[in-house]
Length: 222
Image (tube, rainbow, N blue to C red):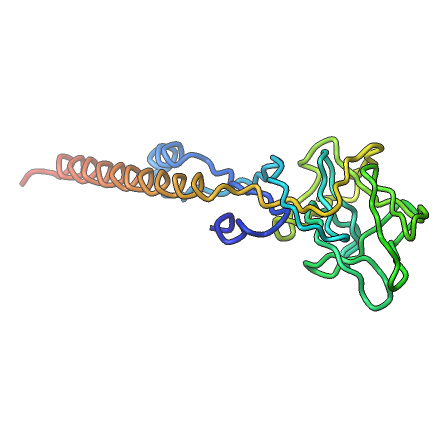
């Protein structure tokens, strides 16, 4: 359901729950003579890149390479591919979603009021034609090192995870990356899950009927 709701959110990454199969849990519960419902073991986020949407906004950025823009949140470092940025009254570059500070190689990115802004494909920030900073793009050796805050903003799972600088990112000014959720695929998946639910319900009914017959056979005759 979260995927459907966030299908139009830039930079959102499709998530899937990792669940132990229902037939396995049903068989296990039968052996233990008690019931345990299937448990969610984790969440997998797809890192497939979403389509690029042209906005022509000077502060809208997309990544044509792997990695994440580095932002600063109240929890510490954050990572996102949602490149919708804006300037506040002090000239600080912030994310549109959440108002988190966007970080550069030389610290927070600040643009003087009324200045001409340009981002090169390497991530260099030019203000009135002069390079003043470089937007920081990082990545992780394993995507399991980060966890989602809202599907488009991520943070480290633990303090030992290391964010690696992307030396040669491909930054595209005037574009944003769309969500990688495919509505048609999500609808088909929901139909599939509904059918699986029906089959699982049928399995339970059959097991109940078998147990009821076994109990009847086990009753002493009078």
